[in-house]
Length: 624
Ligand SMILES: Cc1ncc(C[n+]2csc(CCOP(=O)(O)OP(=O)(O)O)c2C)c(N)n1
Ligand SMILES: [Mg+2]
Image 1 (cartoon, rainbow, N blue to C red):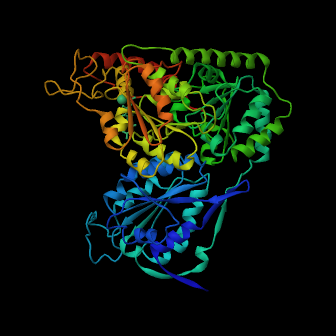
Image 2: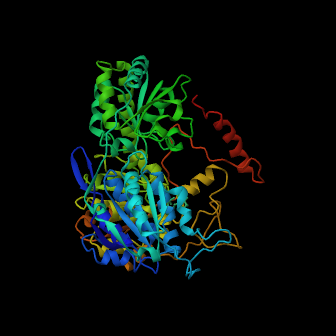
Image 3: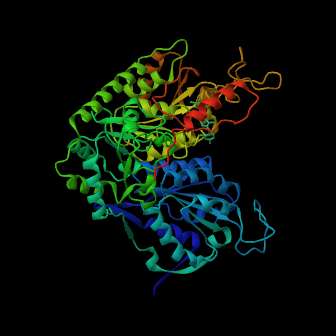
């Protein structure tokens, strides 16, 4: 056996460089490089290995959480066929990744984390930043990654990577198991040399399969669909990851079955397709929610049925509703007591379509769906056309970005009041245009994620839609976008705090308490009942400028349109800053979201809200 003598860290980089994925005959390297921040836990190990491998590009980030968002967004944009590696020091550098690592797993997106770890040798413990434990010397902060990783390992001997790395790759490239993979790397072991078998560094291609469903189950699904009067498709993220949007359109057109879309699935059909009902669920359109209410068969494709999709299990009120779930993951396919079609979305839709033969829904049902689609388009236009004074409304700003922005662009968002509005209002013109991180809805994903999208597809304009709250939480990677020449157009919507949670709080009887960025009065933070408030002297436009962005401050809708045009001609990251109205919202459309309200309270408005809540909860269903 020929061997190569490498440090453990050098061996990891040499291995990662040679990992490829292939799907449908298209092969590509799986890793596009490594993000990181160096500290004593990785500088001389992985850091040194990266230094001697300039063909495996190293990128700096400003914050470890941000780089994991960037890697996840990159992977999402690449339909999970490529990602980035993230390296950190031990201690806070490592644990800073936890939030975004959980987000990647929840969103089923592959990211490979290489946190440094405490000395395996132990004689020098406790090292700087080490969490000590009285009951075990085999504990570090990296154990916190265990519940949020789909694969977790600590490499205490250099030869352990020979079996750990292939496992890491199997999980990362599996559409079923993918998510965060964490390999915790003790700093002494990173630098330790070993004679590795050279086979470990040969090119390996991981074939991403298109698994097919059980034939008997397909036959039963055909029976169920043929018997149904009001079937509805719910298109989830799996449709897009599987590149099944073409066959979905064929399916819809051949059968006449309308489709609603989840947050991750929006864009599965073009917004103007007559059978596209748009967003479904808590943030859904009237069209999709009306159809969901009475549907007798739901065909869920690549969805994990979050509470936003199911409107907290109130969306489907037909007493006889049944579910057929097409999903690559058995776990999701069985949800809601469904008939599971466990398989790849593209392959399964194609097979089901053939098996359905000449089936087509009743003409009246289809006509109703088309009419609902048209009514919905009118409603979107109504909201786009609002010209609120003196501050603009968020809905009209979304309309402006949608209309004046580049139609080939990608729009990214994650938290706040924007996601709900975008889910309803955004007009998706291609399957990758609507990029919402709404599995974890993590404030701070927006700019970091935008960077990952731009890196994944530099030819497209990237519009980052971000609220002032998210911006304040994590915007430092504007610097990285400028350093690396990846232009983002960031639309910063300032409404002095949390419009989303403020509105939620008011709807729950709590008057927006704690959701405004204002000075305290009489040692108390004013809520939305306060007659006058003192706004904080924060200048977010100046902040963005200080990070190197080109900044365009707007006051009016007209300014905003001009800014969008100007931004197109600017080469580097541009921030369009505008204040908008905290109180003008987009309504809900016959839907609900379960947020539990205090059962006992000293506040009358909470008592009233609780009474309504108890009524609404009655609509929640089990599907047995
Ligand atoms: C990391 C994180 N912390 C807290 C929350 C809960 N949360 C959801 S939206 C929101 C406010 C977001 O404020 P902003 O970005 O200004 O958007 P707006 O609500 O004003 O539209 C908060 C605190 C979250 N989603 N993520
Ligand atoms: Mg805000």
